[in-house]
Image (cartoon, rainbow, N blue to C red):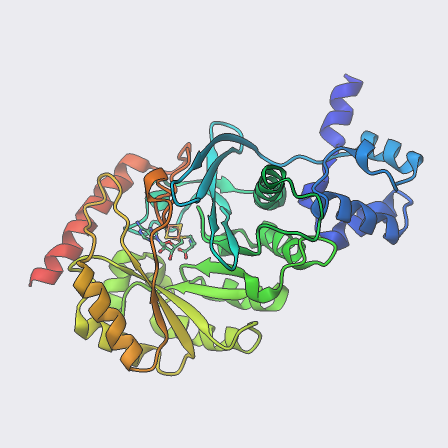
Length: 383
Ligand code: SAH
Ligand code: SF4
């Protein structure tokens, strides 16, 4: 009984940013420098065992044992792609699992992190969205993905120096809509940026959103990291069909929010992600309409050819259409790149992260609506 009581009252220190650790320590009679030592052990040395935190007073360690623990989500599976991409499936309890993907490149190592088990936004082209929504991830489950991946990669590479980081960039582009979980995402972002946490610069941490306008303003105030906005259509009629969020926040509002965000953004542009769906949004006139749409928003474009998944009802774009689309934007002076698909052999590409979600929403009904919409979108093209 007592054990159970203590167990339920203990806190997971991975749920706190450095300021929160300081106030927690203060509540328990410990000075701020102790909190900083603790944060550094957790996030720089990636230690989860209080006994290894050798410069902490024994009395403090005893207190920590009684009151707290450090727990990242446990991996269920780990896959390695032939191109070096890695994917972990993490257990987040109750039959739910989320995915993280590590993408090594010559000059950086990027971890793509999930923020929700499932997603409620219902975008037509997304396999996470197709599964419905289960719940928001806790800060410890968001930070824990980086904590675990960095520790694992360092262990494998035999690195012991905490300044020798393998993961240099973090993108919140995994499963879920990060701005629908701001309460837990903001402390996680603060830890990514904190010098006593992961010490990443604001330019190297990117949040991707489907376009939740009010929450973009909140993010600007609380943790203005780099912003990527999923655009995917040049006009409201098409975007309404592809992304239900557009019915609430149409493009004009979204462009306004992007302009406001730019006042605090760590770079002087917004990255627009533009998913290319064969025959739906990849026509040259749609590229020209995009140029008009973004004329007042300094931006770059990242074109993502659709990654198919079973039953999507949608198609990949032709290679020439992709290149033609990119050329039109580039010729108009908008820096445009085409995203390379990495980790294809382990289903680690954008929009393929599925995890295992116990859907709380009405899945069967949603799938029927989704199929009808996909037919609609494709039919509209042929009119
Ligand atoms: N919810 C956020 C972040 C996660 S999705 C967002 O929507 O921005 C990350 C990116 O993957 C988004 O740009 C999303 O539109 C894109 N994406 C979703 N499904 C995809 C698919 N099947 N193929 C390629 N990209 C996809
Ligand atoms: Fe959610 Fe992003 Fe997928 Fe849309 S694209 S359903 S917002 S994860």
